[in-house]
Image 1 (cartoon, rainbow, N blue to C red):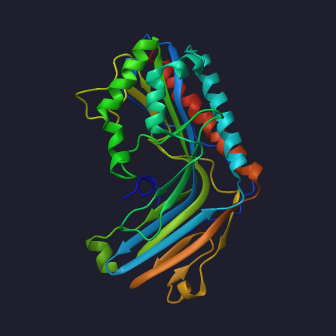
Image 2: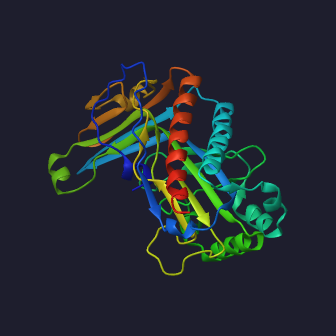
Image 3: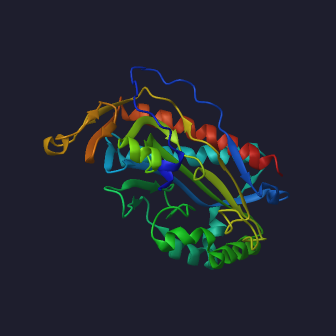
Length: 337
């Protein structure tokens, strides 16, 4: 199961009539060994990225039936993604400063041969496109990772997607040791900041005894601006470096704060245009205009485009969510100083 499915909310219908965005709920923040930040006020942002989903794929299985929904984001340019990223960086630095951290300039970091080695090995030119393709699924979910101008893009810490190397890198103690050595040599704590922005929530039925009896597969994508949990996070590496004995999913890092639940602006800015071919429509059981599909025996597919009211409306919604999550995560991090 991919990370999108694990955090999705099941829904078989979605009304998109509201033209105004409702106020987002306060972010729920989780912590992972956050007490290790105590006394480490001097920090530098070593990695920063905003990852935007541009295609979502949902699959539902039940007995012999399989329902697949694929939705792509339309009407948002790379220039808009980059502008959101630049603002997110400013918001994060401002939140850190307000919380009592001394945010160091990156010039000293970038002059370090050890940082240059790490950036060359693990960094990529921005934007970094990632196809989260599973062998058992009919289409990939696709995202782009943007870094602020002049900075490399880094793959996030997830160990639930990507190739073998990407999945295991979150537990890469060799990399963790070098990052700890870098933090110690510069007398600064490294911050790895990542926001995961989506244009919808994904859900689907799972195979099981009851599902097999019912024989009805359901898949759905609910378009709305949302930040995903766990990988919307601020991870840190102090001079202590990686953790040898821990059950954390982030052993390469000294600690972290992160979103515990999806942070959503709610429906209202998206319309959905179906792009399913006539051939694929044959035999479909039930479909609707909002990205849901219910299939009987066999395989059913549906494709669509999610189109925001405007690029500016999308940008405003995502920027608001990032600002709220940055404030919440940094408040939790600063509270441990």
